[in-house]
Image (tube, rainbow, N blue to C red; front, side):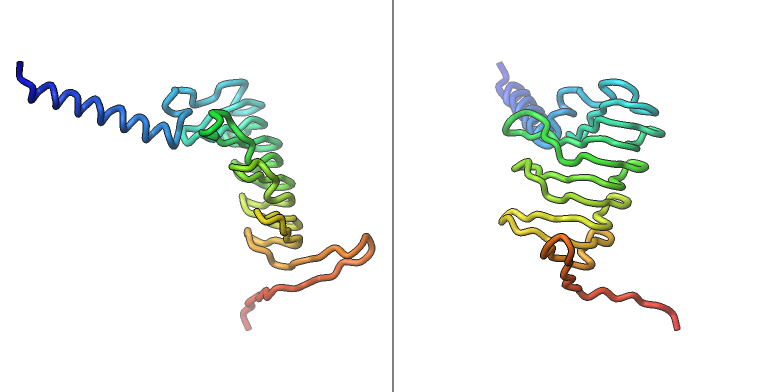
Length: 168
């Protein structure tokens, strides 16, 4: 028997298994063949779709994009289950309107507030791992004006530098 060909076959099988394992580490849904629309209508209506990168969206659709109210999940490898990463309003496939994002690993609320074109935009509260929060007005994903709530009737503004350039 020619062992040279046997070792090549073993090496090839090992390479294929390594490739599948590596790929499934990033997209278990893709490896299991569970991608695409799995429930309802993911064109126009209400449906659930699993994306190749392991995201899952369930909610309202318009022109094959999330549009309206919906929830986004990510596949969490250690528990072999989906965890919520966002729930709220969508427009043309992007987070838009009121919504809440969650930390992927701890499942704790990260940001609750307004979104525009997939970015934090408007009033919102961001919570960090150490428990500290930032409340304020966000613009294009960045904190523009920070607010500290003192009581119901008084808001103390701590302004961060915000420049608006205009032509003379």
